Length: 421
Image (cartoon, rainbow, N blue to C red):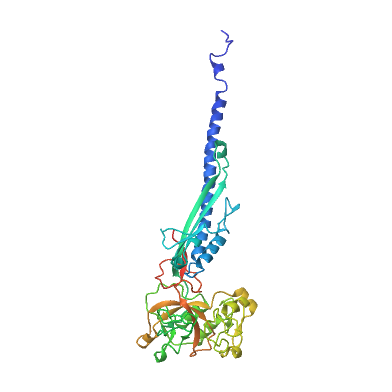
């Protein structure tokens, strides 16, 4: 028999697939929106965390205990934090003055804005916290489901901690008998030193007839003069976790030549490319700096201090003007070479040792590391050379570069900013 009609109920099923597909699309778009919008918030949070880390580290680097430290810390945190971008690097981070950068004396304590910290409590502020919110993040897809603007916030806390590595030169500084007072009326530190005062870095003040010239081999007896010369022309001894006794007998011209490269003075095949100089080679002696105190940033007649000489890229002024005679007639770097090749070479770490112990041993233990300014080139073996004491390396406020890695440095090296939370 021929079938002439439709199957029973078929008309009731037409369009059902379209409805199901439509419902599925809504669900799929919802899931897509959830993934895309949450992913965007996660990326923004990560970018914001990077900004908060940078802000906290920059702020902590300025917590040096002086009256202006919190002002500097806030400014540094804001400046560095705002160099970061968020929202796929499209939007600049905003760090607000007197709200987003706060300080505390303990990691888990209450954090205060700089204006809320009493003057007497400023030296106690050890931790810097950056709280960076990013508001007004409009969802891409979830708006159709009623979601509005979103906010993400990142926090970071940093503090100064002893460095794991930093670099020291291989010349010792003799522990002093404390004077009654320093030239500026302050008290000497626990090792008998006065900040700004000049001390003989070697060699007549140390070993005397023992054969030690206050040279420091950090891993005796290997290496000898060639190792020490390489430390002076290079970065220095960059692992300060030193528990063994140190020392080096004898003295050679190569060590004096290596020392002088930091002043932009070269002999033989040495050059600014193989042994970087400081930004200035200007020498400070009793002739050029009559006061013999605080050549770093002080005054002595019309002679520019070290900081001013650095800005001007002042070259070594010559033996007559400096009042010393350098052996070998070294070549002097030019102002342009000091400007383009200069580095932080005359502010250095120097181990403090008890030089009286040389009489009984060719090696001595390191007491502490000092931050010193190398004042003048070394004329040659057997001559004294002066440095200016700028403070113990692990005490905040000294000008030595804190380029070490944070870690267990044993408390002897400079303090560097490290994330605490």
